[in-house]
Image 1 (cartoon, one colour):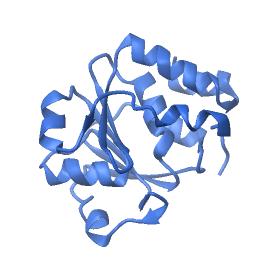
Image 2 (image 1 turned 90 degrees about the horizontal axis):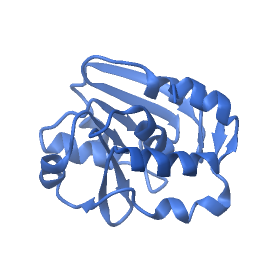
Image 3 (image 1 turned 135 degrees about the vertical axis):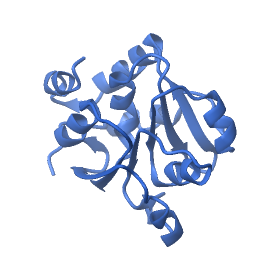
Length: 176
């Protein structure tokens, strides 16, 4: 499992700042969300599905806060049009994960990540159109709704530029 970009330790604190407003209620979040919606995380995906909504793309790794998710959370991820597996190491982004995010898809896709999916929200912001939504969990606080704008893309690009690795290749894969 090769890392293309790795999160440096000193950037971890900065990534705890949410990229958008926090929600505790999935219905309220969905009322404010634009299409398409990319969900990053098992618990976020579970809450969206529980609200009767299938995101275009949902990335899960079977864990929350480094612990295995409850069986009910895992079992709720049925009904997607497609199911894909990728590898991406913890604290990093793999080329395989970036390629998946950049690919055009029809319908809904569940992505099961061997490793960790947490950082996928960042490159998702770069590849989605203006007005689209990336939803990810803020541990013990709720769900973050990141609405894609040129300003948010700039902020995310600055964050990714601070990662260690092959930026040229990563941005080439993402088409940015």
